[in-house]
Amino acid sequence: MNKTSGTKEFYAKEIQEVETQPGCWNTLKIGIFNKNDEQIGEYDRNYTTLFKTFYPFQLKDQWYALYSSDYTATRVMTLPDCKDICGEERNVFGFCPTHYYVPDLTNEDLAYEYTKNKEKAKWPIGSFGFMAGCVWGDDSSWKIQFLDLRNIPESFVRDDRFGYICMPGGAKSLKDCIDFDCFEADRPCVYISAECLYTFETPEEKKEREKRDRKFLKANSRNVLNPLNWFKGGK
Image (tube, rainbow, N blue to C red):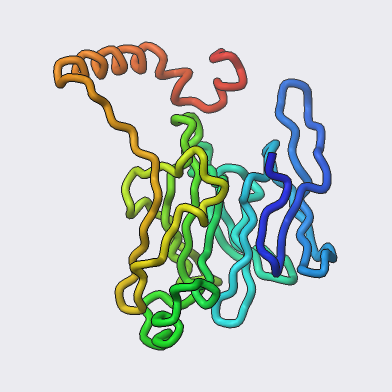
């Protein structure tokens, strides 16, 4: 279980598990700490696990952090004052984050050309990132999405511009899945390690399976599509 999330400058960790009413999952009290291990803030997270849902980053000489107090949404706070400034609102069908990664290319081994030409960069350091997670009730894989942070502190954009790609199940962190070998100041691109599923069914077999799947989903759509029913036995 992941009980700590962050970088060497700031990090967050579980400091208390909070019991809730019978039949519901417990929540967490999350503490925020600086590199000297001094607690500078805290927040409540309405889920049983922190995952890697606190990630500090620096943009235009200001420290921020991506974090998820509500498990269905991503928000941004300033550091070290831990003030919430913008982000997504709770959404029962929102994209539930499990991992964040904002690359600091000044610390990457292959960032010389980027840092040398940073005035020309379309994407300044700290202005973009990645996240992994899922929509509640879909399969158990973590999908990788893109974060456009250029409009921080007002807002940010999250989208699936890479398509439907999954973080490998054996990956320890989202950072391990992103490679900057091809990255240049005027050509922002990365290699992403993703998990792909391939079928060796014949077209006829695939068509028959999809027919069965549609029949199952139609018969069980009330339970499958409503997340609340996952905790009420479909009633």
